[in-house]
View 1: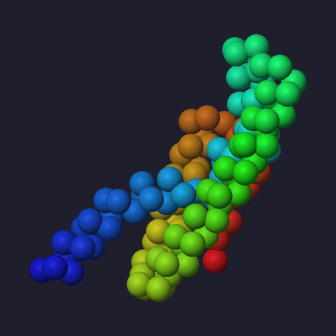
View 2 (view 1 turned 135 degrees about the horizontal axis):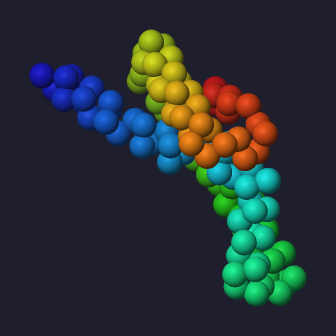
Length: 116
């Protein structure tokens, strides 16, 4: 019974976890980052110095998110079966394709590779 509850909980939380720790493949690409900074520069009338600081901040945060994603994946590999990992990867791929269909391919990048 506990195994079933844990499995159900994992099924419902896994998509959120994978999305939250996407490693910056879609939302943290240099192109997306540049677009965000450009919008903020226009909207907030940022000075060149502020724009440079914002660029550095986003790059540092992107590196942190990628490290968290990689660590999360490594930890999940210790307790999920190969079949579960494959299913999770397929879910990620499906979600990515849906996102691309809804938003267009903003980066020109292919589907993000699974961190292993």
